Length: 322
Image: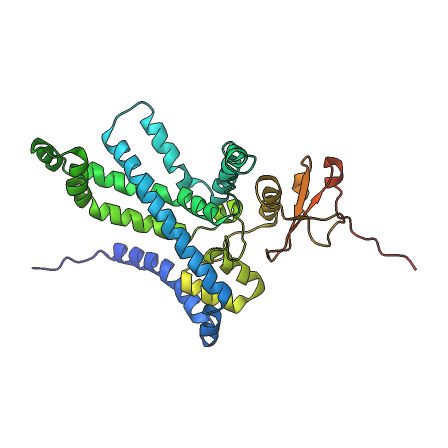
């Protein structure tokens, strides 16, 4: 059989597209200090963050399978009013900035959120800044990938096999488990892998809704960013291990994180004197002013003040004149 000749334009564009992915990964591998790799990658905090990342991402994938597959089947097989609108809302986390997704979770499941206040007052359940909050944040941003993939598999399969099984007396559950699931197996596997990969690399929604506490909510992407601020060499090694790059993390967004801790989740300790660190000045009009060091360690504090005083908190000391 004669081999078809590839057009030169397609070949050049494909080479550029491949280089777009290969060159950054090559730079990450070449620039990493591999002589210190064993020490850096076996450090207790690195191993702890990796274990938490695997646990949270696998839990998010399991939750996505349990909740996402029935939802995908509903979209593919049942016609009901508002189906397109519901599908659009389901896929919205895919296009929302992850930080916005975390803020939405805070406003819904925070201690003062729409549902979170009821959970806190009735059952004493607090989701923000906990390991369960990490799983929830990752599920929120990752499950749409599984839903869309499984829905596409359900729409493309031949339904005559299901109809033949029903005519032979099989129940709906038996048809679903013995006929439908094997037929959409590739789509189900692809959706689960996409969901797991998206959950494993999640940063914005996780740090906004769950925080960055070592051993509790600090996943591998968060640990990579923390190492980027404190230890450049270990950051490179952990990035090469997990495939994480530095996420955008700016001052105003950091201020929102401080305010969210004080308002919707974990408030930390309260001090009576202004601290010598940068404070969140966006909380004017609120009853709490939360600050944190830039390293995001476990220690944190919350300065309770009046709305009028929050805008003038932590004034700089004036040098005394001789």
